[in-house]
Image 1 (cartoon, one colour):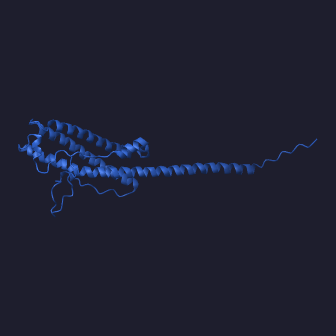
Image 2 (tube, one colour):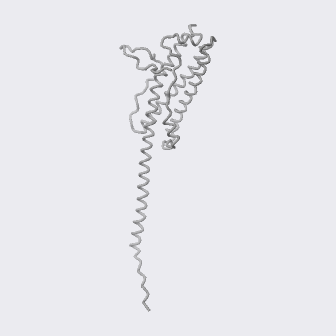
Image 3 (cartoon, one colour):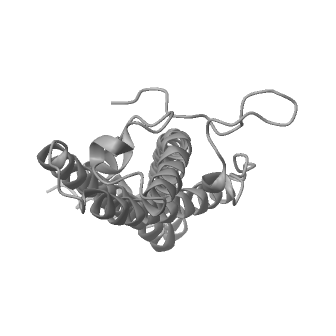
Length: 232
């Protein structure tokens, strides 16, 4: 009868080293995966902030040009009304350079994309909250523009002497929304620049809406505030 095979002695030292090597490999694997995920997330976050920065800057440029015109329009129509020369809306269009209400064209693609994909979660709470306030202000402006178009179409041919007063009231409310939006765009662009370690875009002068968009500077060159270039 054959002798039973002797049990091999377990080398606990070798076994421990092998177990540690396996554990270390798994740990390193998780670490590499997390590093790759973090790097990819940082890239998506940088792309997201860049998309917001470009869209907000473009919207601000349009806001400055058309907003300056709207504020000028309120001043001019108000002066005519006080002088008794502006009674109905058709009178407003007799004022030089007046082309009526000039709607803003504000893009919200970056916000819509970020919320649809869930990438908005990549931003910290303060940044996301600021952007929400900004795009909500844009929504309010869009709603108000629709309201103003409807009122203008309904009353343009009316002879009601209260037209201009109502128009001025609406325009003053609208220009107040424009000032709020300009403040938010400036704050958002500064916040995004700080987050990315970049220089913020050139600041918009505090009195930009008080300037005459059709006036020339003392040197004879055009005003730095561009008048509306695509009046509707």
